[in-house]
Image (tube, rainbow, N blue to C red):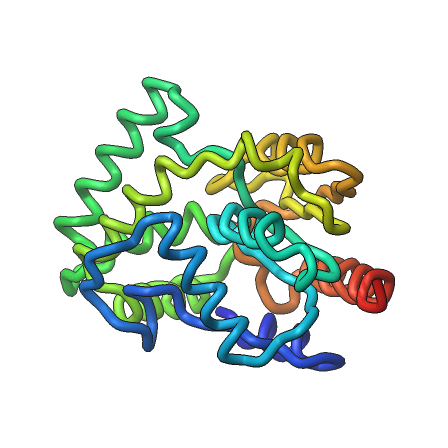
Length: 238
């Protein structure tokens, strides 16, 4: 699911990425999964990697953490790229219908995520990659099952629901590129437009796709990489 991202993002430059707490190879069952702690984790990774100045790439919910980091450490960030993100999480947006739907999905997540029957996880996959093949669904299902535990998945979903960086956008002072898939079911394209509109000088690019995770072989992924490389070339010396 992510191999082509890792390959292309590291083809012409050094790529530093890390597993969010409670995910992948990072520690599970961590008590504190607050926004401030996630920001602190990013700060620790940057320090440990010895990064002096770099392009910061945020995907999905990590866009909000990236925004907060860029405000706190503008001297570190030569440019910021935000893809598929949102300014407010689903609970913070305050839509009663959306909250009810998301809460129901969260309950199903907690009860069904780790069970052998992949029905719920595949329904979850269809939100993220509706344009995928059956093989992609199988990969995504296996990835979710292996990399996050059911209770942690539920807790992380709940924590992301209250994210709200609307008051931070105007404080961003680094060059910013915002990209968003037009028919994204996880984060509506309006979320990306709102984010770009609130950040001074930010550029917004709408991508022709329905996938929250752009797939290998999808023409839009190649377009995404082209935009990323052009932005890095433009801002790296800034």
